[in-house]
Image (tube, rainbow over all chains, first blue to last red; front, side, top):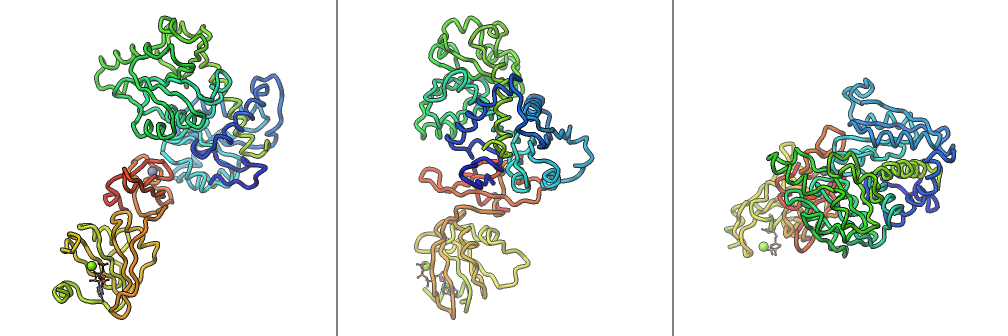
Length: 316
Length: 156
Ligand SMILES: Nc1ncnc2c1ncn2[C@@H]1O[C@H](COP(=O)(O)OP(=O)(O)OP(=O)(O)O)[C@@H](O)[C@H]1O
Ligand SMILES: [Mg+2]
Ligand SMILES: [Zn+2]
């Protein structure tokens, strides 16, 4: 698990399972690498870094965005993608456990990107794999490449150190926000959590942050805090979380970013969203300089290029 | 006094006495040690025995000295238990159980969506932490869920 073979090559053959496996220095190194690869991600430069490498995409759960950006990342670097399609449909895996599937795919590919519905499946896969595993999201806990790309977006569009950030929406179940606030705590931050009471940030997470000297403020109103933050990280509130449809409508309308709301925003405010959005950001916001969520989607490519290249040791 | 107590359980010549087990946890101690119907040695136990420090359970295993690693798991459910090694009817060694920092295969993860609860060929794995506020807590190495109470309820 996360073996470091040589100091000069801290990433070669390393699995990417959970953000918590990475120190701040290592995260910075991934972000630096992504920045160097950005012209390739944009198609402005060509690269053959992954020439001759085969990357298996093993998705046991649909996820168009993550899958696409891994495919694009691999192809921009000249790698071949072994797309294992929807796994249910593939007869190779019929009745086979994940451990065996991973052992088999390890024999065919140079790296495996895994997405799986069970919590901890990527950690287990790493125990059985003879090639690096990149966790493309397992269950409801980890999705490290999303967090890397969120950090990268924040660094490119704003700044990481001592950031004043608000996270809004479903903070109770949202794994992206949990993982992001843990990672941001490595850089020091002032965090504001905006959610309806039913969907508040879990108290263990708030306690952990406070232990790490992160100042935390909790509110249910975007208006109250919009003038105070440099980054607003929006997430979707799912209808299923509310037994009462009326309650959902109320919450939905309170947690909405509109042109009106932004009148009071810091001119440098950047709005991020892991996408897909439903209606928590109105379309009129898209044309403002605050909207960075489509840019954020693009940053998923250089970040995944960096992780692929580092894990396979083609960049040291 | 001593005679009376000895009537409850026969003295053993060689083996292990696990004393000062939290009252009511004797059966869980057997479970945590993996002692089941296939175990061949003689085992006796008392539950809710009155002792100087309140009620306690005691487990006695004849003819076998268990490994320290196995015995230390008892600390997960009964941190004050003592391990007394008996040789030739005498207590030759007495140790308090020490909380292990890692346990494998002993406890079930409380997260039903955890890979360790599926049919994959793996054992559960937890890191063990002890804090003033929360007592003993286990963190699943797969899904990172924390078990902070009812460890005894979640033995495999
Ligand atoms: N030969 C034996 N057979 C069975 N049980 C024994 C034997 N010798 C001692 N024990 C039991 O082992 C435990 C520890 O014995 P010990 O003589 O050290 O008692 P103690 O002085 O009360 O110790 P403690 O302070 O740990 O309670 C007691 O529960 C005792 O009844
Ligand atoms: Mg005694
Ligand atoms: Zn678990």
